[in-house]
Image (cartoon, rainbow, N blue to C red):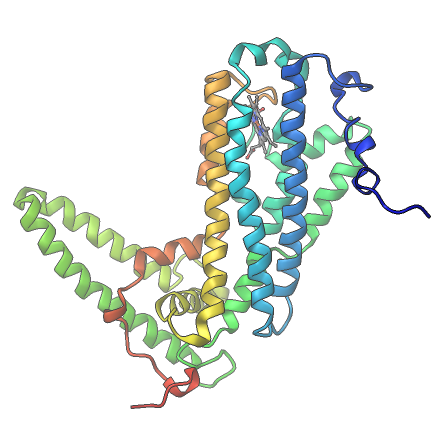
Length: 367
Ligand code: HEM
């Protein structure tokens, strides 16, 4: 066997012969269309890498017992996902070198093809844990149904539908993360301990009481700075934020059958964020950080795509038939890790935290 070389290893002959567009063989003639095809293909390659890393991270998080040395592995893969997404956000700059009129020259022949049918994007969302019910409808259909429906009339439809079905049959990263959070010690207490519910309940109540105190102080300062006439509005704003924080920590939005569980998951995330300086929580907090960072990158990716689309085609409908930018802007509200975002609203400063219970568990001698 001859020594390996660069072009065979990367199968460059095949890779560089895939830019023929609808015409197929050879490169498309228009340099703008070649640009359009290449930038899409580059994105799809990045998506491929992201999916691999997400699944690896998810599989390790889904283990019944996540060993401490597993977390760095999960963080490593999520950092890769986040780094790729950061790059993907920058990549829209390259896409924008296509002028609106250059695009109009070949846009119509693409209909009804659209990035909306990027099944790898859908797989990423599913593997992360985006709920079907949270998706924005597309006409009368949800995005996934749309892909599956289109797939029925296309020779490659079975392949696409199969990939989506596989992703949907797997556990999501979100559910694996929540299981892990559920088992996370809070003040050294775990769910199998007899008094665990009381420990969690006391932690949450202490937290909420401290929030009331802090709000009262901050509120009065704001009123004296903005004037008495703003009092009424500020009372309403502060009290609704506090009520929402309480409802969130007590999991009032969750079905009764799972409320205790959801409450514990949220309390665990809040505990890690609050006592993040504890050496025992060093990796767990890095994990939560990178999860939020990854989702933030995904939101920025969606936003940057929408702004690029607005610049190129204005507010006209997309080639896939959606409302275009109006539809894309609605997807900016997607959040998978809602609890981790919500924690920021209730988080206390370090010097106001309830005292750490069971300090010995965290490697400190009791006073
Ligand atoms: C000239 C460049 C582009 C334009 C004008 C454009 C426009 C649009 C529009 C209008 C939509 C909404 C669906 C529709 O009705 O078609 C959409 C969706 C989408 N596009 Fe693009 N796009 C462009 C490039 C790209 C690229 C390079 C990617 C990279 C893969 C991409 C990925 C997506 C994805 C994933 C969606 C679905 C968003 C969602 O449903 O959450 N687009 N695009």
